[in-house]
Figure 1 (cartoon, one colour):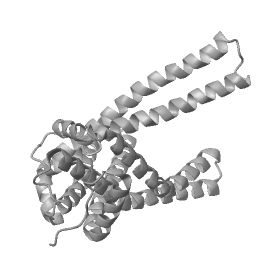
Figure 2 (cartoon, one colour):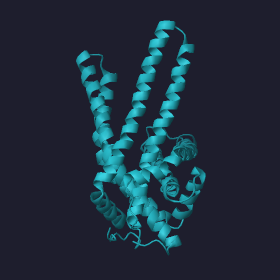
Figure 3 (cartoon, one colour):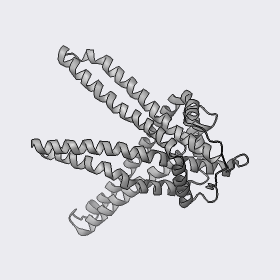
Figure 4 (spheres, helix red, strand yellow):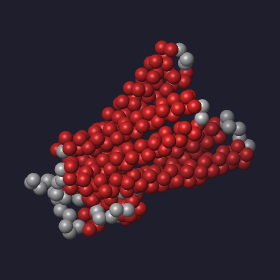
Length: 314
């Protein structure tokens, strides 16, 4: 295969990353879509496992009137969900590896990349858990601190200055504090997420087999360009909002209709909208996933090339 002409090494700018991502996606669409379809299938399998387990548990309880008989079902639910989640996480990582191998001009087939990552399947699941846990902990701490700040501002305005909540000054002050706290929360989450943005790549392409080591490696690489990575993550997220809205809007409308009315026709329409929203969300995941994983691969390639250079050439 002729050497490609992608050059994300220059400035790690949003424009370079997006342009290269689109080019790489278009030129390898069939392969990436194949893996994305497989990953989305495992995501759908999680939903099916939950539905089957809930139905089986309900039937068993109805027959025996005892929760003890549902324990095997609960165990099956946990095992099935973990297995499907691990497969989903691994297939997402396969896309990262495929894209990275293209960037270093050592392309692999889907079968080869998958085979190389299968031994690390549970590592990718643990990696996803750890990142989710870290994000949740950051969110909890940030929410607690920002809530205290908003309550302090409210106390100063209401108790300290003896203003009523309806007073324009108090109303605007509390409102600004709330909006500022929300913006600060988003900024904090994006900043910390940026440190773990490429955590899948070390586990997918390097020798490490540890989720913790992969996360540490991601932070090590990102630390030299955290500001630019934050900008890339923010822009990429904003670009995907319109697509995500296509699925979320029908689901939200359907949920509102189900909770607002007991009319049979309204309930049916609401249920149909929620089902339609679920299908649209799956379809959006199918097409968005490769683009997002390619962006990670390009950022990882660029940062690794900056830090280590040498044998990494396009």
